[in-house]
Amino acid sequence: PAWHEVSDDHAVRCHLYDPAATGADAGTVAASLSPCNATAGDSPQTTALPLLETSDLKVHFPIRKGVFKRIAGQVKAVDGVSLTLTVGRTLALVGESGCGKTTVGKAILQLLQPTGGSVQFGGEELTVLPPSRLRTLRADMQIVFQDPYGSLDPRMRVGDIIEEGMSSLGRAAVSLSRNERIDELLERVGLSAGMSGRYPHEFSGGQRQRIAIARALAVEPRLLVCDEPTSALDVSVQAQILNLLRELQTTFGLSYLFITHNIAVVEHLAHEVAVMYLGRIVEQGTVEEILNDPRHPYTEALLSAVPRIDAGTGRPVIVLKGDMPSPANPPSGCHFHPRCPRAMPECAGVYPSATQLSATRRVFCHLFK
Image (tube, rainbow, N blue to C red; front, side):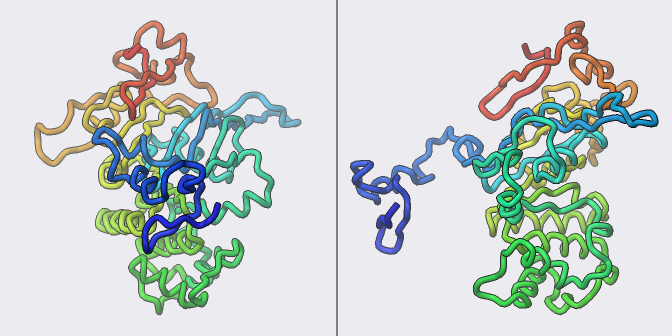
């Protein structure tokens, strides 16, 4: 497309603004597409562009036994997960430890090869991309790992850790030198520029996590997968990291897939929530819908376990019987039915399909059929 003048100081390259194609001048088209003209009922989830979409994503690990290591079964770590993350938003993926949250994040980034399903990033199907194209997209998708102690190379200086991504992925700063860019990133995450010559062991846990965030930001990503980035930190430092992430999202328009088991973190940072149990999504919706009015029995039990400061303000505690089953041998039907206080006979036979409760909310439960 050629340049089209939207206003005196605003031009755009897009066929949507071509008078020959639309029959209207660029300024009129721009006014009709302005977010200010959206109706009051439009939600950000329905009007924003999807950056990341997964459909029926599966990650199964073979179980090998015997001398010849023959496959004797499969661990279904992720079994049919469908998610949508829009530009500039935060999707929280919550659930018990071992439910497959981290595996979903790694499969999205192609750090683990999915067994089946689709992963689309910016309209491109990642599961079929050649390695050369996937490497190009690596800079747009970064991860902040859970352990700030184990995710940084102890033999490298902080400046080299941050610079490594820029060098390997070819995202060098245009207007700044590498050293200036490193200093800018350190200051952006709340550290001193003079710290670039130090080693990771010289920093506290919260400072190391800030370094990990700076390393991810160095290549100017569009998507940041945050794998429980605050779980290894004390509460005061957790709040600092969460505030930093929210500030960075506002400044750079980042999209976050935030993996956590901490409901307080979800309430502070997320826009949408997906609740996961034993490799599958059981409920999805906006943070207000899920936290204020949970529908799936597992979501109800999960939220009832959150302690409240004021006596009498919390939900009645729902005590689940037994432990989470093994993903190597999941129950038939709905995976939650052996522990569900509201289980029905059909729950053991057939896994429930999605029931759309609203434009932004769906639940996988026979109670809502």
